Image 1 (spheres, rainbow, N blue to C red):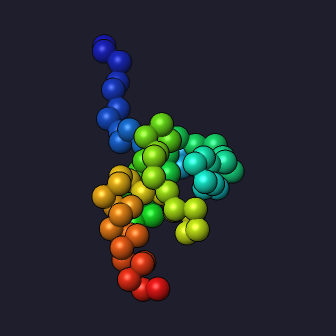
Image 2 (cartoon, rainbow, N blue to C red):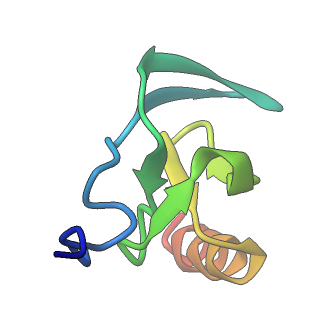
Length: 77
């Protein structure tokens, strides 16, 4: 009998990390494999994390999302 294979989401067995976003770096508060985009809710693997907002303490999926969020909050100032 062949072994059972379970199909699960790649992030289902991984944990969400908690980070403190700093200027040009971040500090790990709780270990994990990914964070969620503060705008879209999309998971971002830590090795792919490149964009975040230090003041708002949120991560961004990509530069387009970060720029759109910047424009949205700059207009409100």
